[in-house]
Length: 327
Ligand code: NAD
Image 1 (tube, helix red, strand yellow):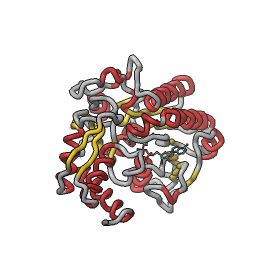
Image 2: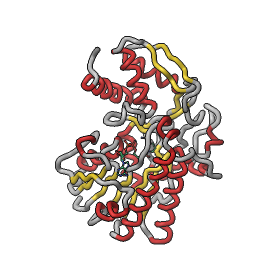
Image 3: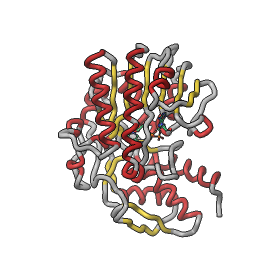
Image 4: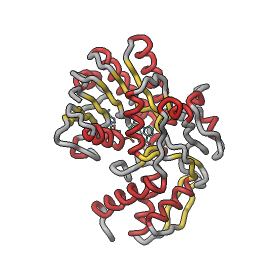
């Protein structure tokens, strides 16, 4: 509890929840870093050392790693499918964050390093059918990840591996499958499907249009992990002896249309669905094969989508009413 832990991307969705949980667990020396000023963070705590820094810069990484025992690297320039399709350079430049942090971790004798990878590293050719088999860790090869964002994360995984193999830095890598929950991006272009669809249904309800747009035909499949499970998984993987990348995701597969059904039920409001077939929609089918995490940890994310979405929807609805207001 007296060790200094560094959480990067702490002003973001998952990083904010991680800092909150580490505080709850009793860690008192927490350094939270983000490129955004603390006033823009989703969650901010006054008893935490809150730092604004651009971690693509090597000097910033060396400075924030001073005196640190473990690093949770959640910083990345990322967003939903619309953002990662249109901003491949920005996504790939996050390679500087992981590279400089690993170099700093080594120099500053940090003992453990966590890297947040993604299901976007998986070979896209294995995800062309909505009923495609759930992805197991070996399905990242032969490598054909999501262009831009996926390549950057796959490269990051290998950087972690080689820093461990050649220099003995204990690195842990989890491949997150879509995470959702309160205190995350819900508008502005970086939001992912659950938050985006909650917001669209809220807008349709309060603005009286009664209609939402869906990217694709809505039959693409995904799994969605509630953020509390995501945080529990990060902590378990960090504490484990799992050295190679491992899935961290829900195995409850749904179509996007089913996701909309659930949100309509929570909202108590049915919408007309307009399908935009020319918009980015990502791979056709994706789910997490949790065989390895069950074998290694005897645990997997289990929060039902219907349950996690209630909290998420209510939070976004409140944010909407606070910022946009009822018309
Ligand atoms: P997020 O965008 O909410 O948080 C990322 C944070 O990193 C942001 O607050 C951003 O300002 C910060 N950041 C970006 N560039 C930075 C820089 N140069 N220096 C310092 N901070 C910088 O995203 P998130 O959903 O919380 O994702 C956290 C991590 O998990 C990311 O690495 C992401 O790639 C990974 N991930 C997330 C999901 C998901 O479903 N949310 C899925 C797979 C992987």
